[in-house]
Image (cartoon, rainbow, N blue to C red; front, side, top):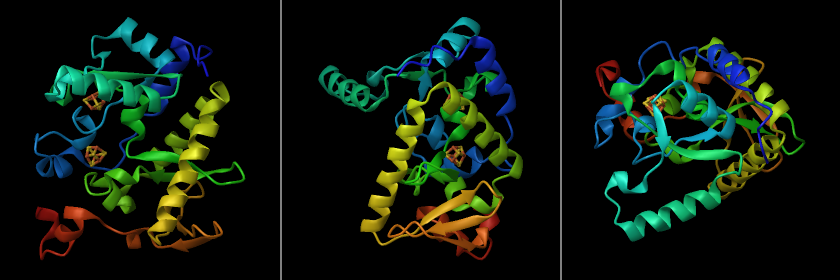
Length: 243
Ligand code: SF4
Ligand code: SF4
């Protein structure tokens, strides 16, 4: 599926209107101490490889030196390991996207960070009827991303901008609706196996837990959404804010 209809001006507009802080503090300072490399997890190419829509790629390549093509060797892989990793990730990456690499957090140019940077750790959750309900998260990062353990701090402005950005993207790249609907279904299957409910920041402004059996939603206080990994331990300490 191509996204050639997203012009440079449209990419620029989406970037400009999807710029609200995810939480009212620098969450990179919260997670980086738990990453061996000392970088925020989502800016560490050895943890997560960003993808850019092809039209984003055209826009950033024309306007900044921040982005270049991903090189698997950057994380110390041998040529054979790198070739295998490239082949695997390319197979998993939708045709509308490019695997990319940036200069790193010390040299980030925030106005040119990609949509994957802006949306992380969230993805648009779509139910089995095809309705975009709100934001859930990439669960494989539960033990890494501090935001996932602090969803009560996610700003209203961020949620609104996230949803508007994806409404525009879905209008231009219809295949993305199917991709995220499928991703939501995979989450339901995996959480069902673990007998877990799916946490959701609903577009109506409230938090819910979704049953994986029947997709029924139960409204919950956002503060009650679970914490994970080191952040769960830190929250039990006497002075959690100092961790
Ligand atoms: S979004 Fe998550 S992983 Fe990225 S900097 Fe914030 S806490 Fe760290
Ligand atoms: S562009 Fe900036 S926000 Fe995105 S991964 Fe690179 S350093 Fe992180």
